[in-house]
Amino acid sequence: MSRIFITFTSLAVLLAIAGFSQAADISLDPKQIHALGIQTARPLVSSQASGVSLPAQVVIPNKDIHIISPSVNGMIEQVLVNAGDHVKAGEPLLVIRSAELVSLQRDYLQALLQAQLATNQKNRDDQLLREGIIATSRQQQSTNQAAIQRAAVQERQQILRLAGMAPADIRTLARSHRLDNQLMVRAPVNATVLETSAKPGERRDMNTPLMKLAATNNLWLEIQLPVSQAGSLPPGTRLVDDTGQWQAEVTAVVQAANPNNQTMTVRARILKPAANPIPGSYVNVHPLTQAGGWLVAASAVVNQNGQTLVFVRSANGFRTVPVTVMETNDQQTRVTGKLTATDEIAVRGTIAIKAVLTGSSDKGE
Image (cartoon, rainbow, N blue to C red; front, top):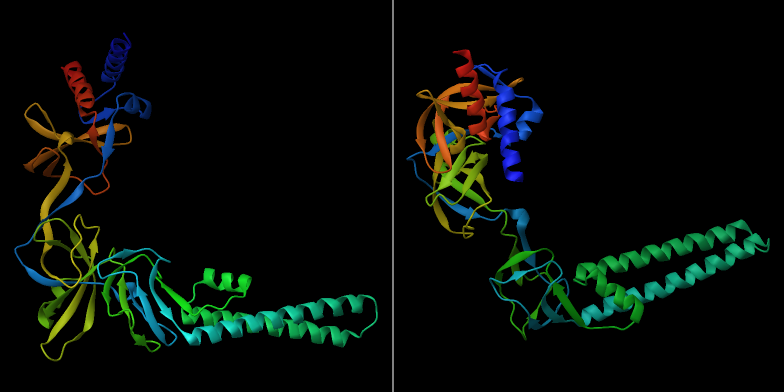
C-alpha cells in the first residue's frame, strides 16, 4: 500500500510540474528535485593515452628513506626483521650490546640525582627567604643552580636519544635506576625494510649503516628525456602505465642537463595506484592527451524525439543540452556538446525529468 502511495505521490508531483515547464528550461524547485530523487555530477574532461611510450624508473623520494645506524659502538646480538618486512613506528629492529651505552646511562642518572639535590636546595632556600633568614642573593643562586642541573638532565636525555634509546626506555631508566647494556633499535616510522647488512655476532662501529627502510606509499617516477624534448612534459601532465592500473602526474622538470648524455630528468608522482609498482623497477608510461569531449555517466544521456540530450542544472531547475555520443559503455559515455567543467548534469532521476519534459511538450501542442 505504501509503495502505491509513493507512486501516486511521484505522479502527482510530475503532473503538477508539467504545467509550469518549458522545453528549453524545465522548472523544478529544490523540494521537487529531492522528491523525484534527482542527483547530479560534473562532467570530466575526456583523455586518452598517446602512442608515445616513455621508459621511467620507479623511485622512492629521499624524504621517505631512513638509514638505520647505531650511534654507539657495540656488538649486534639479534636481528629481528628481514628485507621485505613491513614494520610499524616503534617496532624493534635489532638488539645491540654496548659498554659505551652503560656509561651514557650512568651520566644521565648522575645528572638526575644532581638535579634533584639542586631542586631540594632551592626549595629550602625559598622557605628560608620567606622566613627572612637568608638574603635574596643566596636564593637566586640556588634557583640558578637548579635550572643549570635541569638543563644538564635534558642534555643527557638528548645524548641517550642520539645513542638510539627510545623515550619510553629512558623513562624506565629514570624510574628504575637500573643500567642496561642492551640497546633496542626501533623503526622511526611505518616503513618497509629494503636492505639489511646486520648479522648477529658482528661488532659494528657507530654510524655504520645497518638497515635501509622506506615508506613505499608515496612513489615517484623519474624519466630521462633529451634536452630538446623535456618541455613536452610540463608540470601537471598526466601519465598512464602500460597496464592502465595507475596514473602519475608530472611535478617537476629538473633544470639541469646530464653532461654525459644531454638528458634532463622529469619527475612525476604516482597517484594512488591499484597495484603498487616496485621501487627500482622500470616501467613504460604514456602521456594522456585530450581525446575531445566530456565523460558523463551513461545514465545521464537520454534520447528525446530522435535527439540525444543531457539535463544540466539551471537556476530554475534543468535545461536541455544536445550532445553527440562518441563512445559508450555500461558506466560512462563520452560526448561532445556545449558543456563546461562546472556544469551539474543529472545522473539519476533522468526518467522523471524526461517525463516532465514530455508532459510540457504535449501540453504545448
